[in-house]
Image (cartoon, rainbow, N blue to C red; front, side):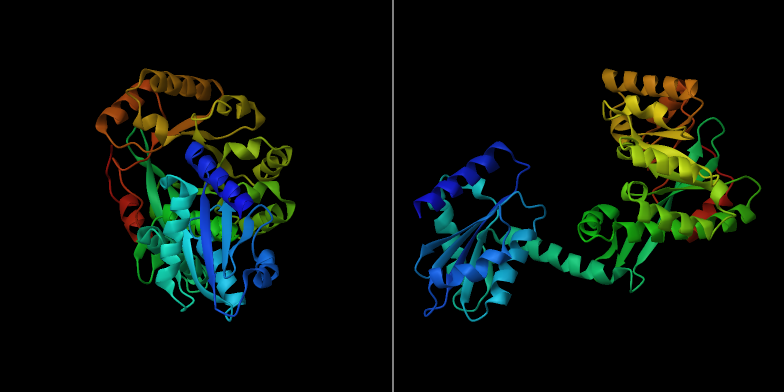
Length: 391
């Protein structure tokens, strides 16, 4: 028990020092006839080797989870312990913020109280009920996302991009949305990290890409000028050979759209030799490429010579702080370098007229953001194309 308490105190201390590190404590109450030592061999394979499992009392087991990724992870572990040992587990108490307690004894007391609320029902109770609600909500969202593609709940919205010299609409960025049957339209921030954890991110990317490739010839038949579409692809598309092969196959099903497709690429791709080789392979398909979210990382400028991009997309974090002298100088440097290298520049996240005018004065080529329009449905995007509106 003393060793376990020591580990618990260490976990609390780490959580206080490094707020990005997630730590949780689970207290598993056992039914009367079950002893802790008896059940430990059943529990051990259900947790990671870096986690701590220990007998606390003769019918009480403690689990310390360290460095877990998502808020729902402790709940998932608790469910696994219960579901694989239904005749043994009476109830489980959970604490997900051990750093909020003065010491290990207070933490154990709070977790015990949560476990006591469960009684002998096998229920999982949180010391912080709000954290429990959030955990259950995320777990449900994870389950719902499994069916989202199959049930055709995902859709693509398009944020317009405008030429700053002439004020005309020149393209769109394709962005995924989820028409959740209960929660309504969800933005990517609500579910893309779940998709990545579940290994579904590449499937979602492919869905958006297919939608964009299908839409390009439709829009360009409706107007006299060329309208391009940007699609953001995760780095794994470029870093793994089988994913690249599949991507090329998808692109080749829409040969007449490729010259107006722009793929947004993260800097991470350029830090890998395989990534650069993949871009060179795709470049032969007559696709355009944008270097996405440029300017916030000091490594950004070092990777510019790795590949010939069509445009640099200036990260919204720089645009939002344009009044800051350092950020303003960074934007000037980005624009100067891009011009010297024959690349266009696209400012992301433009929300004020002052930002727009300053970007025009500095010679930025294009921009997108809520000042112009939020991302809109495909029908609304078609209306924007046919409207003679200039910024």
